[in-house]
Image (cartoon, rainbow, N blue to C red):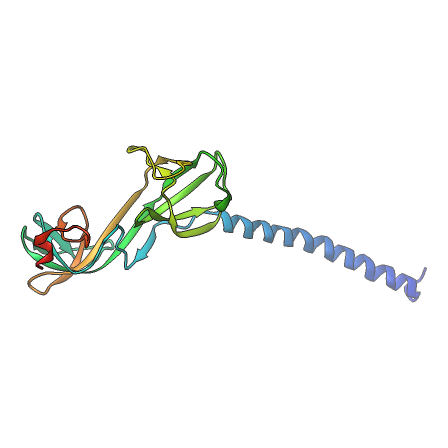
Length: 210
């Protein structure tokens, strides 16, 4: 069979196509695998939630300082102290940032069809949003503001319904708030029980008068 023969030319083209296909298929499969791995990998840390006020009744506004504490130039590192808050002062909470440095790990104890998980699966819990709702990461997908009352805490025990999951390790999280001082200085403080009147449902007459 000579190169001028149409059958010869057809066989050459066919051979080249087969080689090309044999090269493309592994590349495509590799790309699909990489996409799948990316979809199920955990979100990069830290996970940052802006405008965060993470509990029932949480409200920005006038707060009372319950102990001397510092406020900083920013919630990020590096930061510098810009003022000292004194016990009894009234500050104005402006906004907040919730930072998850490490999420809680939650082990599933029984099947939860709505989430596509079963016994032995592990899900990740991030910011608590109040009234039992929180953010979950499950098999590559966010479940934001989800009813998490089925989860039993590691130290406290008990849950509000089903008890189909158990916290196996508590993560590390911070909540920083931006506030204004009586001297009109604006800065950031890491919340550590140093403010009163943050809860609109607290029913404290002292707070109601602010």
